[in-house]
Image (cartoon, rainbow, N blue to C red; front, side, top):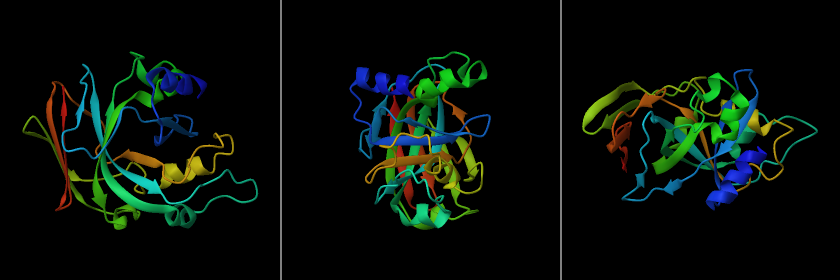
Length: 213
């Protein structure tokens, strides 16, 4: 986590956006998203060979979620702290060539492989309900790369956020009001073999477009 912090300082990243996940051993972890692009009409992120894309749901916190020593957060507490949900796309590429397969801690230090995030349009909060089923379609350079129901690995987009909120060893400054938290892939990790245009559609109306250059 200290390496994450130093890397953000070196890059001049003003971190207000985070990803939450779970380690291979089941521990809740988090990493800053950088670069983070907040729903621009002409978003461009640098492409890297071996890069992958994960379409996700991001949430915005309306209030702080401080570390609790007396009682754990329930799912309802987390849901009540969320003001908005958004369609988003994370680009995954690690400076550790073996990724987490050699050392998960090295992968964690490398921001869990985050290479950029594009936040898209707002979504109805109903997408956060466990087992929600929305069609998801992804185009890479005009070719359909994914066309199926969106499915979080735990079937509940708030699982990993709830786990992280209850991690008593997390930084005290984490999960502050106004933070954006992305919650895990709805499509697995799709390799992006070439730079170009990316288009995402969740449900009937939520559309996100950006470019990899």
